[in-house]
Amino acid sequence: MDAKTYTAPPSIGRYGSRALVFGVAALALAAAVSFLFPQEHIPGPVQFFRAYLVAYIFCTGLGVGSLAWLMLQHMTGGGWGLVIRRPLEAATRTIPLLALLFIPLAVSLFVHPGGESLYEWSDAAKVAGDEALRHKSAYLNPVFFIVRAVIYFAVWGVMMYFMNKWSAEQDKTGDPRIRRLMQDASAPGLLLFGLTVTFAAMDWGMSLEPHWFSTIYGLIIMVGWGLSALALMIIVLTVLGAEEPMEGVYAPLYFHDLGKLLLAMVMLFAYFSFSQFLIIWSGNLPEEIPYYLRRLRGWWQYVGLSLILFHFALPFAMLLSRGVKRHARALRNIAILMLLMRVVDLIFIIAPAAYQDTAEPTGIHWQDLLTMSAAAAGLFGIWLWYFFGQLTKRPLMPLGAPELEKTMEAAAASAHH
Amino acid sequence: MRKQTRPPTYGLIAEFESPGDVIAAAERVHEEGYRRVDAYSPYPIEALSEAIGVHHSRLPLMVLIGGIIGGLAGYLMQYYLLVINYPLNVGGKPFHSWPQFVPITFECAVLGAALTAVFGMLALNGLPEPYHPVFNAPNFALASRDRFFLLIMSTDPKFEREQTAGFLKSLGPREVTDVEY
Image 1 (cartoon, rainbow over the protein chains, first blue to last red):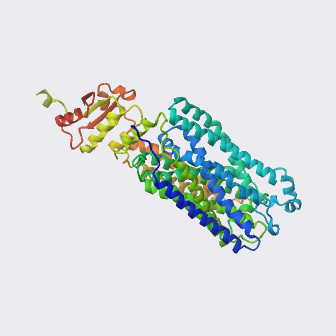
Image 2: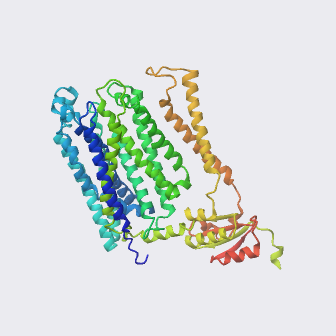
Image 3: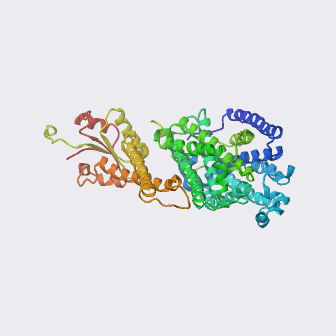
């Protein structure tokens, strides 16, 4: 490759500022609806925090999920990893922003309007009257919750810092030892990723229903994060590939590989989600089954059905086709569907948790659907703005990677078809 | 003159030293209109399979059908056993409780697909085959080491010994030889 620099095109900056405007507007809409149209037992601030939580878990998945893919591709190698490496690195560099965006959730622990809260264990009055929560309060208490979040972000931040630092050094020096270094650091890195995400998922999601527990919960969130990060990367490649300098660089071969991985993630998501359901459904124990009683009666069962159909069956059937996986536009459309369904799944996980005390089938409230999807779209827009800003900071290909030239040649050879 | 009395051959084989050369040659051969073509390399080369069009096989469809039949059979087997033949009350759940049928249905679908893939592959490629003329080609043992081979079968409608040999030679191989039956 002669002096190709792979500088991000100026249009990326424009997309970023549009995303920011859209994001702020959507988040403002979520806040306005939360405060102007509160539900009966859910005051405005709590409604906003619930919507924000959906958005926050979704966006954190994009940054932290990208960190996992980054380390995974350092371990496995392969052209698909090389072409998404720079977008992945840019996504991991949003982790400081995500740490900052955690502040509203920390604040929510100390806000109990009318005795209602986002996390019922954060309210000392509720804990005092609940034996189980009293026993769990050594772990589930506001201070330790915040300390743990700081630990997660410290771990993710350190991994993000070194992965990006070494990659920049590799660009400059082309030192082949750096490749080995990143590979060696990735194995323990992935282990730490698995542990931190499991705990983060228990903290941020599972503790919404503090009487309930599921040991596979962390994996469900983890695979959801991996899925959304991968779907985003596929979309980013189609956006970047539309113009110079990346036009023609992303060969069908890479989309084929990314499509296979997307299929694997779709199946893994279905596998984990169904495992949790099957075990709790067949056990039918009083401390576990209410989770599904809240979600599988009334209108929520149709949301669950939509997850089976559009989060699993449809993408699964389409991704079986080799032609679809190699066709960038078709694959991008599936990736967009997956991002949307990730939000639906998070709403399905988070929204019914607020109706734990009602005995009748949980209804679907329009405020939930509107505020949660608006908040998710809004925070995603803000996140995208920051992500695009990071994306323009470095060449779109790892110029110092020893395998770059060989990979580009192989792609060029395969692109004749 | 001797050439005309030569017995009909299995085809012509060209020997290449690098994967890039054989891929480029295979693409030219395909462009030229040859369809009864085969290629041999020490390791799988995606682009080479692409070039000679082996991906257009009926096997994926057969595997899909095998998987669907396997899944249906698995579900119906459980339905017959647990609803008709020996209804068993498990935890007060209905006899036809589909969630508990899912794992076995899935496994049977995988089994059906996998068996179809193996036996369908054998049926389509004709293995096991104790004798194959391509092994008469000189140096062919190197196809499992560091050489790449491209074969045009004599049954190809476009096959014309002299012309095809000349064409293959123009693609820059080490050698072009006849493959005897």
